[in-house]
Length: 226
Image 1: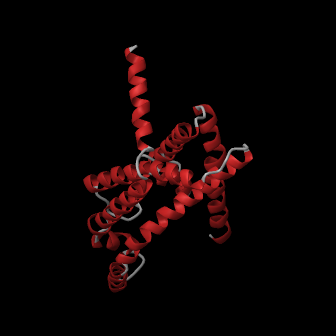
Image 2: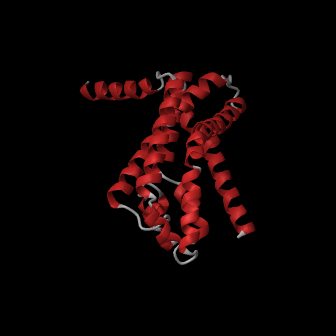
Image 3: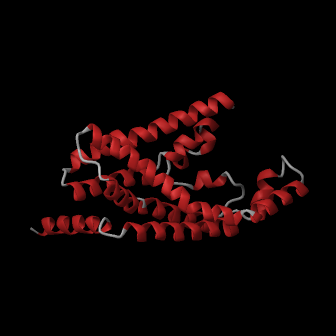
């Protein structure tokens, strides 16, 4: 009975995530995302890091110019955060809605947008944890960020142990993508009264497949233009 009560309590806590107002979650993601980006730009990717990264490729004057240009356009990267989140959420909604249509389920875009938006909180937690690691350990070069991302397959393997073409796909395969799919499946269970096996199957066959197609596209693009 005690174990059953604990399982019910955990289930209710997961369900509570999807009771949040999606607009509040979206604004929270944008705000915290902007704070994380500000800290990265000013305390992680310092001028010293840029000089270490490009010192053997560019002159000191050219690197200084590059830094000044980037600082000038910092505000634009913050303004693009809401658009980036909206695009990411919309693509997931499109993938899942296709799965709904193919399974003969009613597509309710407003509800799907709310479910996906609340599930994206997982990625925000991932960014915050990665930032904490970067602040504690520090980096010497920009590409050190990839090695210190211990939540991704690339971080576990080490970028020096794989071909550069595989860096992005292996970085994309991370723990938070798995957690996102699991949480998304829970959201579908809760809002559409379907069993978890069916919902996780739907998520894997839609979002998971879409992620795989994107990885293949990136690899094709890199091979074609490298």
